[in-house]
Image (tube, rainbow, N blue to C red; front, top):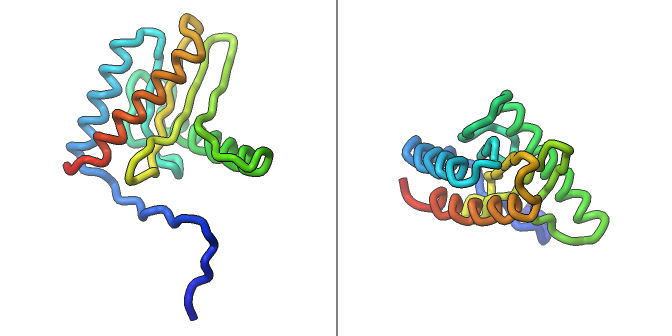
Length: 145
């Protein structure tokens, strides 16, 4: 019996990247935090909520990774149900700043980038930084170790 076609593309199996790729991603996050002082933390996690690398996270980075995964999954489901559309990012706005989570594009599509910025920066700039950084990180993650 053949599997039923659902029209939904299958995601590639998760294969942990090499330590060298993790180091390159870590350097990228460190550079991002240095160039944009308003960004208080940056976190790369897997789509299922496991921490990959982070920088600047004053709290529990593993918890941030799990919450970011859940928030983006909920946003993606809501966008699909409410507007029959694909979610591009998730944004949380607080009195003290903004948190943006985006899916890192590329071959793997199993990684997320979350940036947390203080209130000294505009939400649009934080979003732009997250989208640009996710493109750059996709290049790193898709490259051979």
